[in-house]
Image (cartoon, rainbow, N blue to C red):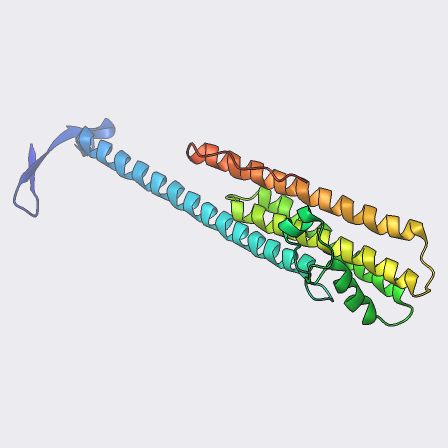
Amino acid sequence: MIAVKSRVGRAIKLRSTRRAGGARGVRVPVRYWALIGLISAMGVAASACSTGLSSNSEALRAAAVEREALSAAAEAVRATKWPKPEAADWGARLAGVVGDGRFSEEDAAAAYVAGLRAPRKPALIADANAHLDAAAELARIGEAVAQSVRPAMADVSTLEEAIVDLRTTREVYLAGMKAIAKDGEPVAPGEVRAIKASFSEAIEKLGDTADDLADAVEADRTETFAGPAAPKFVN
């Protein structure tokens, strides 16, 4: 038996043995190897945990970037070249009151058309197409956010507000086309119908995207905890 003193003065007995070829070696206790295995396993687990946390952080950063892009796209949809119309009072609507003193879509259209240079119809159509492009981009980003690591109901609200604004924008463009026709510029009925149909399609697409986002939020809640069902947006 060979005794080796440790730092604290305890003797750790190591059994000497005869190995093949006559060389003498040291037999290390089994618990030593068990300890080494445990330390190695802990190192692997720590490395895997670090990798998982890093991947999760990257996913969260990507989701934040997508959310910023969603807000910017919604702002592009809301941007207009006319003052924002005021919503009609529900009491006045039910009572059928006309001329309630609010700044209406017709007022906004008049202000918008007055600022256009002749010929005004091509300028209006170009602005309408720019709005439709912005709506398409918002829908695209909304679908990307629905696939992100942690979608939120705030994202759904962003889309719902943009839909309300886009509906108002549609009415302003339609009223603007009517005002231009009234002033004598040639406006075909098909052109007015095309604007209305294109905006209605864009609104429907955003509504579907809002529903997809709401479903994604609900799925995330289901995985995390039992929460209330997320309301779907109704077109």
